[in-house]
Image (cartoon, rainbow over all chains, first blue to last red; front, top):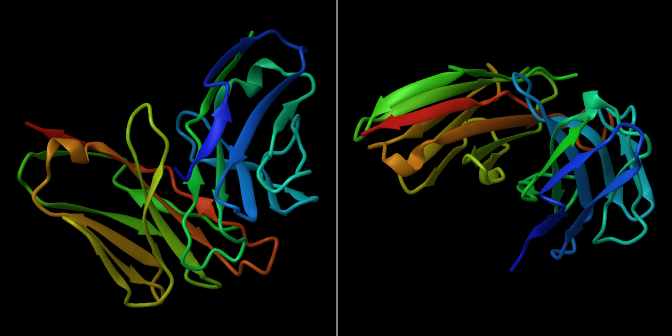
Length: 115
Length: 115
């Protein structure tokens, strides 16, 4: 089944403790992206990747890191999480950055709470 | 940076009635518009991707139109059913070859179908 797999679904952590949210897609998609969803705000892009070893900042990149060493994986790293990073996170992928005709496939989301 | 607006924010519709809502986006430098359906506790799923002025897309009882000259898209649902209850997101993007023209999501229209 074509899908984007995110783990974990839920995570409670403490301020400053490094964590990684994994994202993997099995559709050979070039384009992958991380979003966060906060109440009253739309999905905001954190980082994106147009292909292997090509990553770029989105609208809210502060406090996050990503890597794209393989086409299928795009982990989101929080080196020193803070409470303002408490949010619902989505990984998404698309066939190509040139998104004409292609929608995003989203992962199931990760609910992160930083205390 | 694009600004994508959706209205209304929330909508209550009687089962069996038809409804529609709007996505507005800057018409300059338009490239593509996406509609997603986002059910509670799930992840957004792509409904339509539209690129051409005058595009009309249909999937069952749901259809969408696109006016790129005036910068709006309508989503129509005919004969609403309980399973249509969801948040409907639109996203609009500029030139995908321009890294500054990212796809931007609106805040969504939350649709509640009343039995």
